[in-house]
Length: 184
Image (tube, rainbow, N blue to C red; front, side):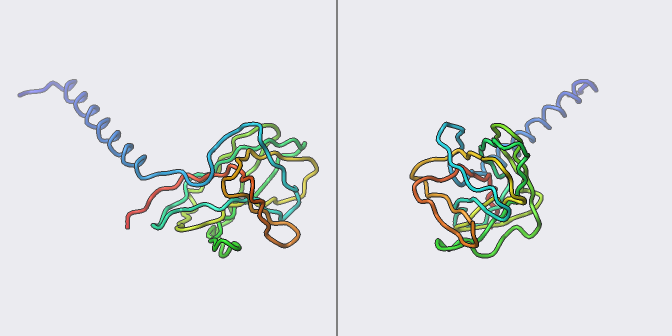
C-alpha cells in the first residue's frame, strides 16, 4: 500500500494522539488525593495570623512511597494584606510532628478575598509514606482575619502557636494534596 505525504502526516498525528492519551491515562491512574475533601462552603475556622504560627492536618500517604504534587485549600482572607506562608510537610507519629520532609523552602500567598490556593510541590520532590502533617506557617504577623473551609469530624486540625502543637478534634481544615504513587 502506498500512502501520500498528507496521509502519512495524518497517520503520524493520530498515532501521537493515541500514545499521548495512553500516557495521560496512566499518569491519572497513578495519582490520588490525600487529606480532606475540598469544599468552599460556609463552615469555616480562623487561626491567629502571628509569625511562626502553623495550621495543618494529618494525612495518610499510604504504606508505599508517594511524591507530593499539589497542595490545595480554600480560604478567605479578610485582612488588607496578601498573607505569605511557607509549606511544611512533617513526618507524623500521631502525637507530634517530626522531621520536615520539605528540604527547601516552599512559599505561597493568600490574596485578599475568597481563594482556592494551590502550591506546586512537584519541583521539590517530596517523598512520603504513612502519616504526615501538612501545614502552612505564617511568615509575618498580620492584622485581620482568615477563614479556612472546614469539615466536621474529619480528623481535626493541628495548630502551632505559643511554642506548642495543639489539636482541635472536631473540625479539620480542608487541606488536601495530589500525590503520585511511585513504582516500588
